[in-house]
Image (cartoon, rainbow, N blue to C red):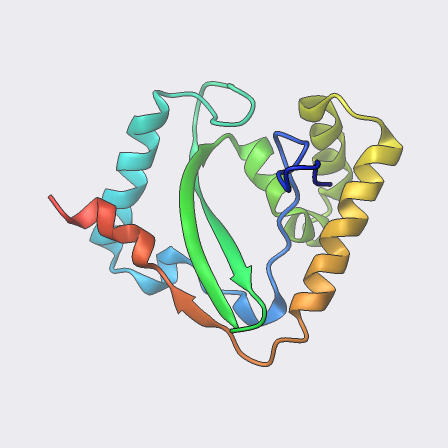
Length: 152
């Protein structure tokens, strides 16, 4: 759900990856040493706290992507440090496949302070977005964002 400025009204959002982009992640694109350098920099920047809910503990690096449907470009726009629950919720489709969809939905509602109906509406919008993006025949990967990690 977006507000009048086009930004999401929620801190935690569902991010359904188009089917043609499954596996297009940095762990599969970068050499392990490069991915570890990026991941460590992101986790250090977060100071031990999830960048969405503020939880401490073990964090995971989550890639944020934008999709230019007209040009078929999957563009990396950020990497954030997330706790397992926020990361699992972002990837609700994978959580559902693993039998953890309900837990992810509950976490979405808790973090965002929203109702079940609002969560279902947000999930419906994410599903519609994915359905539309699945009509793009082929995606090109743009990882230019990573320049900031390697230009020192």
